[in-house]
Image (cartoon, rainbow, N blue to C red; front, side, top):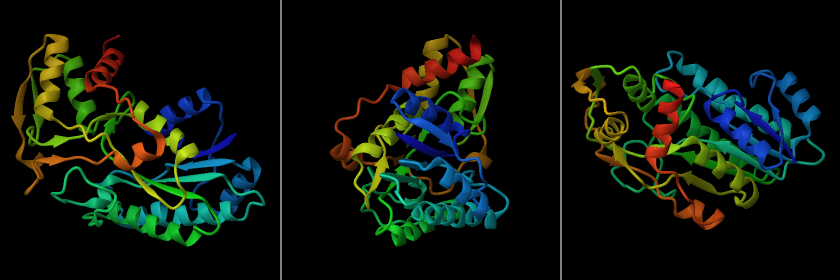
Length: 284
């Protein structure tokens, strides 16, 4: 089994590469730029993948160059799908990583895949556009679309909230600046998300969209309380008004019903295990 993985050196890609190799895949990282059609086609021709997971994207929602979202997330994905569709033996499965951000600020929770998308930023819009564009390849490629909800783990960027909190506890900081700490979100483990991608390579139905979601929510206040209990260190929370979003939804999570129908019941790691993993790496 030959897995072509785009974004293999990113946060998710590093963990997914390791899990895929353990599952018996030969993992090939995309070495070409998505925007370079000739290099992209040459790489696809050389690898001759039996499976593809497309993670590569501009994912930071505050990226300064709005056009870049569409050049990479939309047009880069188009070029990848075009290249894959030319293979004499097409892949058995192609997974495109979209995002739960496509749902926008809906008050429906847990969110089902049938919820109408309502993106509110260029990142989410570019991902939704990628989803719609991919349907043009349904007759040529067995495409599965995923919409991951929040997840974290070792190697997650420090500008994300959970790594930021863990870092403050590892340094035994006295104070931390946050926004609203009483909103509830999913904070799943990247290792579990990696396993879902691999399960969908086998069991995902072409043409379907799956939330990668647990339906479990935690507030940042609960996260901090867990870390205080684990470390014995207390920290003072200061609310920075710049971090507080207007009309923020109190509880937001996804339904796991569809993905569990495809792959079976998911044994999600408890948040405490994820936090311990991240904290241990900071303090050892």
